[in-house]
Length: 590
Image (tube, rainbow, N blue to C red; front, side, top):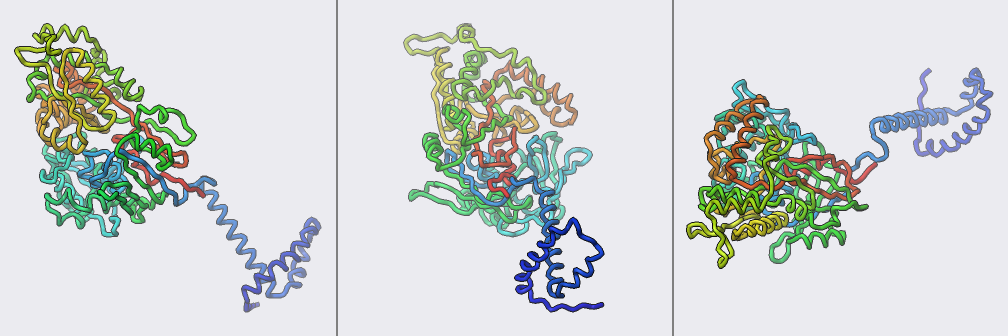
């Protein structure tokens, strides 16, 4: 039998309540229901009512299935949802939201990290995983050629395609000294070549076991930057109005009348290859000093803070307002002696005395409120090749230090208030940047060393000036600076004699033939036992030569408001890496 119905849906829906009332009234007779009377009962319904019941049953069944499916695939009522805003305060001014210039500034590094995706990235366990790359790079049998393939259909935030040409452009820009990228040393002996639109090869002159970590690199869009000469590169508007491939894009920049940047608003990007971030907006507000930052935090102008000022106990205690995360960092802070430049510091007796007079425990307690560890050498405790003998040989003794200077001919001149040897005064400058923790550490070292009869002149400059006018030119006697060893603690870039000049990071100008052999052999093998043995010998030589005084290894203390969920980091390579999973953070729930 073929039945044809002409349904007026609005009228039918209006009649559903009447039908339900009629049908519901019969529910009380359900226990006595006889299935044989069902056909006769259905015959009492009009065709229109029967169709309405069928439609209702279908809709009810479909809704039930959808709700069941949602409950099975959802973690519950607190599943992440889109929306919300997070506001963080930072001390300093942004200059370069640009991944090849940003490493010189912590402020720029933070902003670049959420604006630009990387070829590879570190996960919460510090394992390398693909980001823009489709997979980890393949390596040739001789370990000199790395082939990396991009994910298909990648987009820049302006919807243009992201391709191999962008990688080549980024690498060549880094390698060109005129652009003054802090990353130039990482790629100075590397040749990048395009295979096809999605594939690039990197050919090394020599094997490097740690080279793969260099792929944690943000890529620049060639179509945005290629027309700019080196002289205009640092002045370009694109350094702030960034077009990246990361989870957030620059939406708004607010400035004061004199051009000082007050805030930058980032909005979740719809083109991000891992999907749109849960949080809709992240706003960074900038302050000239920590007092301004703390006042903004207390007045709820900001919700979180980037670099935590350790001297403010308020933020080291438990709070109902925030969750506090103590994140490990693979870096040490040291005073590097410029051995070729300053004849006073070239005297080993002087370096021995300064080492013995350095009270690391006092610095950690007074500057970092205990949120740091003592550092004893160029390889951190727990890293590959760490030698416990370095820690055992380190102690603090002012009397022993004074005796070494006396024996070395450094005589105290009561009139001058300092030691003198062969008419040369015991004085030198100590340079560092204006980050509050560095300034306080430098002041404490100045005081400790003055007790020996040394005249230490502090030179405090901005991070950008430190990089340009002091580190690159090696224009310092002593430098208080932190070196990040990365996930693979290869000391080659920091201590091999070939790295004594810019863009190398051998800041002491340290040169030792045995160290050169050990470090070169260690980076040219993947045998962890060989590498560990070489690094232990290397530490022994450095400890004896004292090209630097190793001071501390700090943790990064990060406060986030309790409303922010999804933060999972415990150890990070660099402070900016706290944002490595920012696309997974969320505020709103469903």
